[in-house]
Image 1 (cartoon, rainbow, N blue to C red):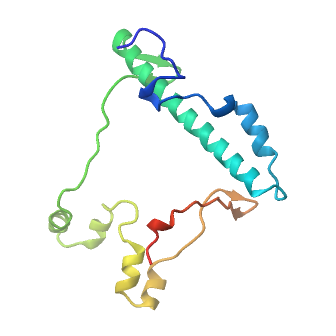
Image 2: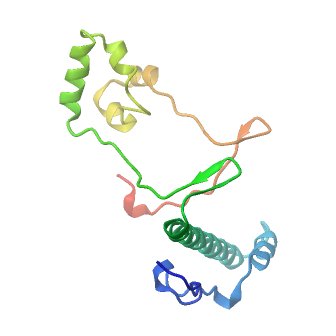
Image 3: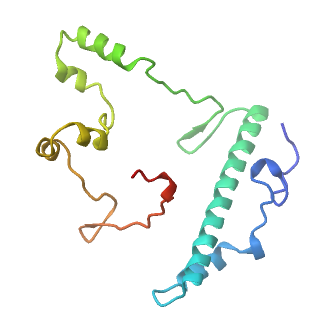
Length: 172
């Protein structure tokens, strides 16, 4: 446990030297981003995207830092409440099915073969749409799957988002 303040500028545990290039402040970065228009150069746009990424990275680093400080504080002083929120230190628990086919057969057996009850136990999207498209005919695929734009609606239309893709991860 640490009793002395952490040096944000040089502490290697939280992302290394945390000093922003040219001491870019959130206000400076906001002004830089607001200044980019459709008439701006690609260099200006790239600089604004880079500055935003830098600011977001710094915010994430600060969030990790304050959470570590809070855990250290709780270890020394105990759990606490702020408004309706209770803060304590614990461990995250995750679950993973170790044998999907065997689990499926066990569930199907327990429900007497009723697939509807089995389907009710599935989470999210259980089928890979691309893989299914390759193994069933196109008409059946169109009946079973749909694609849609998602996101926050702006004037009844899904909001467009900036996509950034590494071509090395695109399947041919």
